[in-house]
Amino acid sequence: MFTSRKFPRGCISCRRFLPFSSVAIPKNNTDFRPRRIILLRHGQSMGNVDESAYVNTADWRIPLTDLGRKQAHEAGKNLRELICEKDASVVFYHSPYLRAKQTLDVIMPFFNDKEVFACLEEPRMSEQQIGNFQCVQQVLDAKAERSKFGRFFYRFPSGEAGLDVYSRVSSFIPTLVRDCTRYSNSGQELDNLNVVIVTHGLALRFFLMRWFQWSVDDFEKSWNPENCELVTMNKIIDSTHGHAWMELNEQNRVSLGLPQSCRVPRNVHVHRLQEVDDYVT
Image 1 (cartoon, rainbow, N blue to C red):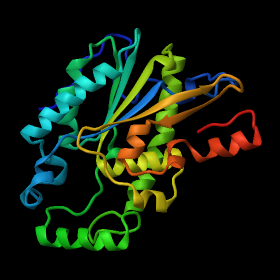
Image 2 (cartoon, rainbow, N blue to C red):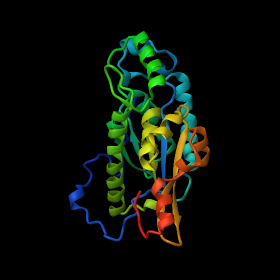
Image 3 (cartoon, rainbow, N blue to C red):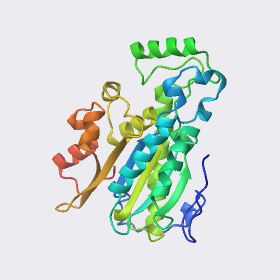
Image 4 (spheres, rainbow, N blue to C red):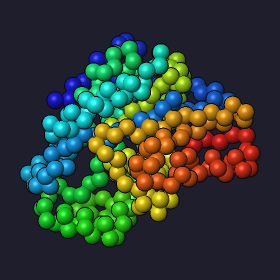
């Protein structure tokens, strides 16, 4: 069962931690980027192995399998190895779906309270809605039709189109930017901050699509990461010109089936060519 983490005094444990209107942001401080953004698909769920699980159980209440818990434990170990710097801190965002919360519940003990700066539920990073209690054959037929039609624009008869998921995931990114700005203004060093987002395969890809400005065609050619695979975005700083951007880990780019051009935001290429002094991605 998902447990609520108790944070030390001064830590941020809910989104009402500091009204944005009260934050004074230095005009010359445009770098809102943390050291890393790590996206993580939940562990294997009952729905991954048995489509009939959705018949009597709401999608958002589908639990992990035993294998899914083992995958989450391995992901926790891998995260701990990746986030190993002195003074490193972590902010967790997670989907409200049970399988995502159970994944996070296994991961959290790998970090102590001093390292965990915040843990926030984020409904916009939920799974694509494909209906309420579901008829297995209808869902299988709809997924087969989606494969022919295309994932981005296909709308489930009683649920969302991929475009709908893209829109809500896109709306989360400005929130993440504002949160990082607040963390910075509360004294948190962003170069030591790691953002971990525990979500779902499709939402994960739409987050990357919006951040790196992929085309719809790029998205359609990509595929979901494995359960509990760490998908890492690292901050890159051009010390010569003072530019900064997030870059997708090369191994992740390959595993997601993406071309080389999708590894960095498209406007990085544009601004490098035009030698613009400043930009934000």
